[in-house]
Image (cartoon, rainbow, N blue to C red; front, top):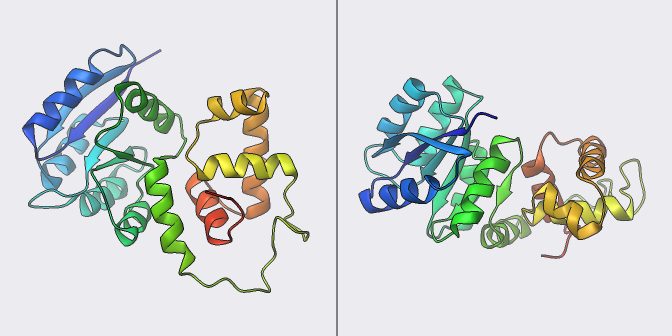
Length: 221
């Protein structure tokens, strides 16, 4: 299996060097380049065509939000993981709207960083629990039409108890493998349930499903 090609974009040399060193211990990951700001990230993304970009959102010249939009417009197959120390509710939502597929804190454990990169490369969305709580605070402000169909209480899109369990796991940013372990079912079964959840909620990916669940208070975070 080919290693996941990763581009690291961060304006702090020590952070870039630390990430390169940490990822060098995983044979399944190959760092193909480093970028010092958003403009550099755009240029090197086009040159190296990485599978995943670890993107600092706050950089000089051009920030990670704008860089992510430009990169994904030109190379939609690239997956972007936002790296941050802390963030506001509004900025988290802005990052997700920009196309970010993962949101992790810079103090993440090495093993969790590697597993997040691989999960996002495989098509999953991974959001750190602290970031998920920020999303919850932001979406609490969004009013919900009481006439909308409630998937947890009847109607065309009603989810089964098992689907509700998996939806909560998705909202918490838990990977399929861990969901399977927690619920004592196979990963294939988890994927089948997730497909049904997406269909019933009329969403396209895990981020949309998580936002749907948080907005309508279908899960307890």
